[in-house]
Image (tube, rainbow, N blue to C red; front, side, top):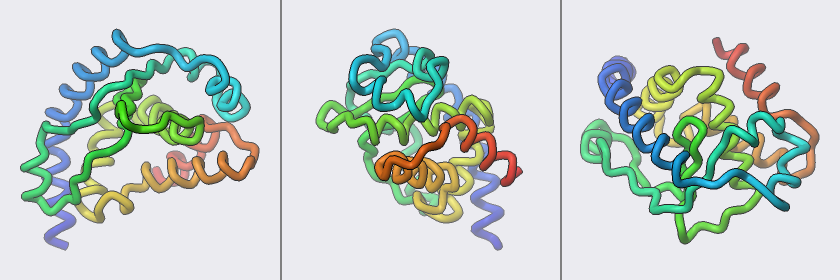
Length: 171
């Protein structure tokens, strides 16, 4: 119970700072990034609308997360360096990470979640669930991994419809 309260308070305190960082870093990634094109776009187009694919920019860069790392560790969060990170409509993929259609699908789920929840809502929820339950306790991540697995198995679905339905059910 105390951990839950602390996680909620910490998420409320960290979300504005995280929002500012996401906005700044996301703008920079959009300016430097490239659209999703070629065979990757073709592979994703049966699951992701052209509108969503057109909005996203992908940057290849180090995916370090220096901001708040010590604070998050102090709060008990598991802090690892991700292979990719989504910041609004910007996707940053580590230079040493293979950029597959499957990885992009996972990140596009996050783009759709950001669009549905708004940047602040996405970050507040992500941080709260991460601090309460660890990385795999984040419902937004679990949904992205589940849809990524569906994609890998060839199951037909629409990313935006799935995200809308899941977030509507969760409230």
